[in-house]
Length: 212
Image (cartoon, rainbow, N blue to C red; front, side, top):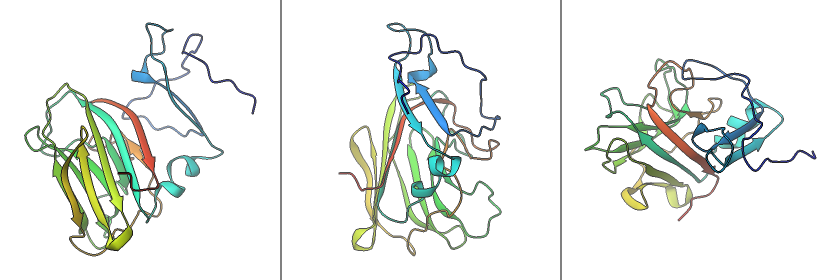
């Protein structure tokens, strides 16, 4: 209480740097655009702030909803999509040996195929929804939006740069089951050892409504 959100990152000194192989437990997060902490007008501007009392309420809890939701992000891949696929956003157990998958994930497929958003039904590796589309050019920004509408049996849609590229899709099999415990991970699997996304990610947002 009483803290002031700074206009820019001047005077801010990072205490430690993190990369994909690092792990971090955080309850307070301040993010500057593109990670640039130099003063304005040449550096980044304050992009997002989220303050909470514990890790679970920041990355779990209401994030893992069974109801309608929308997840979006700006992503700029600097490598072509690999066969094993890079994952910019991930919200399920990272252990592929888990018998019943729940939650959702986002993958960067090859540039001619586009982006792949999958939602699981909690039975084996079966997918309730599997949406792919939006060819991209490596090195350019893409705005990704996945929308799940839980009403009327549930539909999922994928938008890239404002255009609907897949869906609305009705369930392929079963109903969507959210992960009961896995955190929302940005930039790869939450175990920090699988499917790292190479490039830039900005303005990640998750809403507990189906945006239109």
